[in-house]
Length: 347
Image (tube, rainbow, N blue to C red; front, side, top):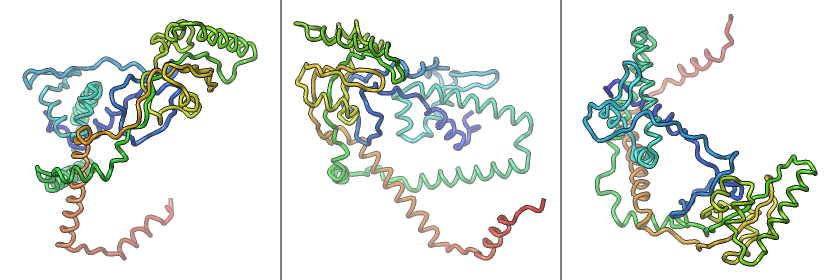
């Protein structure tokens, strides 16, 4: 059944399936893209209610071990079998396959897209859409593009043994700074909310609550988690006793960093005023910066080196083909074509 899906259609389905909502980091974390590898096992920072991700809809189907003819998704007469889904996933590159393994929701969304394509295809064939001259020409171009892409990909593949140990170690040393994991801080917080447009009455109320929270925290044997659960205006954080988990230094907003850098373990910061109110932080533990070892990043390096070598092989192959068969371009004809396209319509 998968021969009904062109590589271009599969690529489109994949593009549609990877648009998922990623939970935002809490207000203490700054919105900043970074190329640094993710920190090692750490609790994710909670999102505020306004930032919380939209719940994921239930999956259409689950791919289970079983016969290749087992139906995993169906809409009317359109069906997808286990073999169809396996064939689709098998056409993807290792990185996209790994993405499916990490998040099964992506595969569910891809299956929905494939099934929608089947329904659209059946409707198009019923209307004899494929018999229109323009569509015939377009399908031929798609076929040729797919053939060329398949050929170039196969002919530019690096050998099985590449990269060797020497290449891997060399790439690791050359890119060592990119494997640096910044300092990490295990934090908890209490939020006293106050919006930017709050009136004086609301501000007075928030300040009164802030003073009460600070007094509670200064009492002997004060329990930060219990106070956060009782007083914090961040409901999700309060349910975890204010726990934010581990945050990298580069994920934390400058206003917060300025406070926690001077804290000792288990100490509580002064209130930090942000746009959504006051934040009182507790530092539970600190991890120093470190460089991820080669064993930890080996697979990433191997994949990167293979992709770079394949791209170089591809360029070399195309260059040789052009060298063996010189290209002749009629510049005069091209100039005439451009001139024709630039002339205003007489209509």
